[in-house]
Amino acid sequence: MLVLTCHACGVTAEETEFHAGGEAHLKRFGPGSSDEDFEEYLFMRANPKGVHFERWRHANGCGKWFHVARDTMTLEVFGSYSAQAFAPPEELLSRIEDRRPGWRGQD
Ligand SMILES: [Zn+2]
Image (cartoon, rainbow, N blue to C red):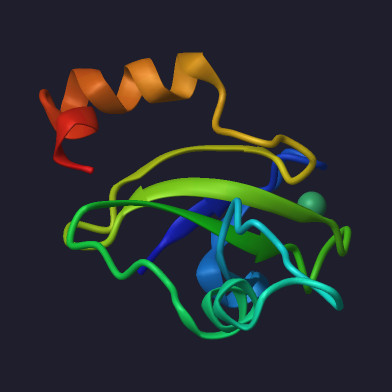
């Protein structure tokens, strides 16, 4: 079972207290964008075997959204950070790199 820490309120709990919101850091396209961009935004998602950045909501707690970096294969959680961040914090990326050497070069 996943154990996550809400970035907003600091509560650590099992995943049943949270609600998954899909891939983090999607570039959103709306009216006026090309059909290809809009299609990609609506339907195309990364499905990595390894490090993944996701959106989670503390549904049974503070109700806030936050981001989580975790390994989809081992369920290891590397950390959580603000949902307002446009990219994962460098400190978190370094922590992932320490645990998964060469990880950044795989994408
Ligand atoms: Zn919370």
